[in-house]
Image 1 (tube, one colour):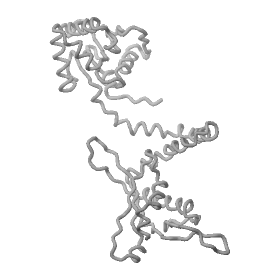
Image 2 (tube, rainbow, N blue to C red):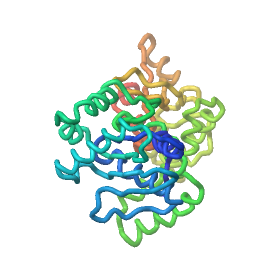
Image 3 (cartoon, rainbow, N blue to C red):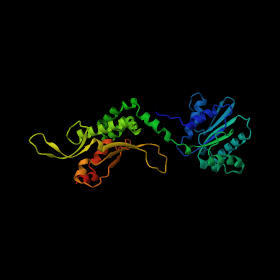
Image 4 (cartoon, one colour):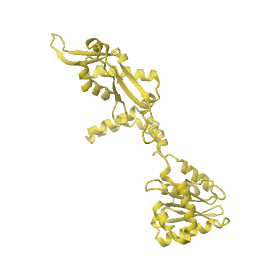
Length: 335
């Protein structure tokens, strides 16, 4: 199982290892990890042992000279229980020397509803200030962390590296055989293929020129052998063929056009600006018109064909080029 420690988790560990830690409120949507983070703090303070909440929404842990009250979900408490607990938190903030600390997981809507009581006005002001202006990580008594502001995009690379780890990849042939022969789910077999080539795909996205040229040459060889029916190992040209010629010997495909190797390129580009953050490069296959077309149709401008090659979006290199070869644009080139 892959487990990535977030900065929030690290911060909570460091915070509650202090001799005089502040209380912490975790807000966010369902599934943001509030309860998980509470469990991680409890496990750390219990020497690695997890906790079973059962029907108790609040767990109290004694460590050092402190009492840590952990609330896994404020929504599980009644209005009276929730307001009493928040009242205890407010009282603890006014008495710096008292031993009680709080770690609360709460949806923002439920938290604001409980704070609407006049007796909790000052606590409401302190919490609202951090929800509106961002967490005050230097606050000595109370820190509010909104998990909806936490980005998980930084873990994409680590997750992909884990998915392509050699020990996991060793199982892929076995998984494909089971899908194909035992479960007869042939449509899912190809879904496992990208992970075998994931590391190489990521290397191509780095833009290494020699790696891109090698990948292009391998594409040409593969396509010539698989689709042109010429069974060549030629990397000088990409051949586009059509119907067979009737000959006395073994039938041969008719070569309609030859693309010199320089007509094909794999290019790495950064995507255009979008209304969200995207730091990942894109791999593009670019096919330019072969010189013979310029001779057949002098003066006519042939725009290069472009195709984004996305390994994980199943737009793999071979299928990309094959689609281009049979595209309407290429047919217009040849007419």
